[in-house]
Image (cartoon, rainbow, N blue to C red):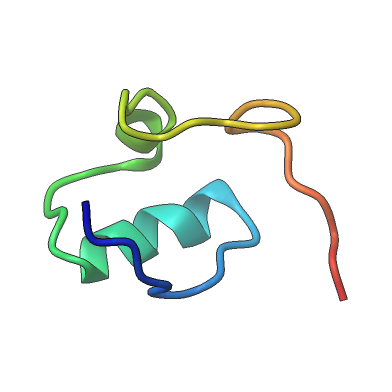
Length: 52
């Protein structure tokens, strides 16, 4: 699998937008939260830490 950084997400909305820009058309935040290809560490799709 090709692993490359395409951006940084600070929320589920950000992640949804990054995936859309990467070609995953037609997804909304609910779809992204349930995608089996995403592994959530330290929480789930509702748990985001403030960095910076």
